[in-house]
Length: 367
Image (cartoon, rainbow, N blue to C red; front, side):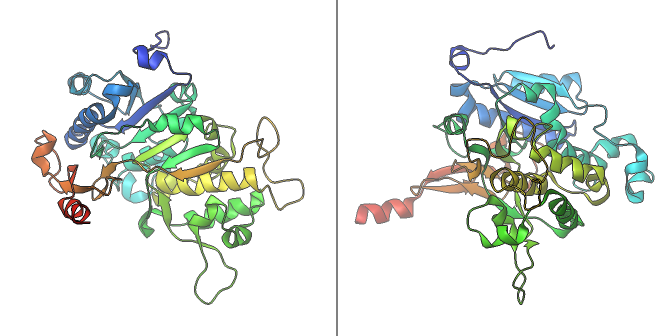
């Protein structure tokens, strides 16, 4: 209901900004199991003290599943049905997905399904056009199987709010596979030419965020290529105003989207978020090399008064095979699937906890 304002408790009402945690999920049993544990973990490790609303985007959840989600932990849960164009017309899908796809498999979020491509596209762009997101200052995106391996004592939203230059906080970068990046860099090169982005100069400079995603092949002096690095969007903190429609980031997304790469080639939101943010930051900070200045930003000249930046969030965090305690006295320990409390938790996925590193403690006491 759009006429209801969720102000939260005293802690939430005292804030001078608006923010929320968000997830995207479908009604597959394994994904629901992951989310139920993730919500309990988030409450225990963070939100029981900070009281942020939690937005659940979905493409259809049964009343039973909604009840399970709301009872998992005392979050302020808001459900949002994904827009009607979440899944494309069948004509936009490649033949292997178009043929013999029944309704259930099409909505699946399995990594090779139409549903996976749809959620990647949604998180890349339309998320920021959604009315529930556009009204916020900041959002923290998590996957259902994201977890905090120890208590998060500092509020990451406050970190971003105190520093007006920060637009994207990410936990780590990683390398994506060729199966989800076919023609992605070639399309980015086309956009770079249109926008007047100096990729050679960006590759030489130590400053721009764009440089993190560039490489020069052996034997070449000036041939910047994408190194296949991506921002892992299973844990990302975003300044919403940087990503909404009309911004340099959203212009980049619209260019990609017009070429149907999400449906045809399975482009991932992690690649779009990393490279798209880097492209937008370059345009805002460095300007265009073309006469007249590239693609103009709405609301005034590029750059403004604040030099914006992306940054690595040094917070305790775990996801699948990755775990960070961010404390030398602690070590990540896998607890086994039973620790999730969910019978349908995937056996191959770890539950992480930060425990005392007895070796480090012994060495410290010895000195």
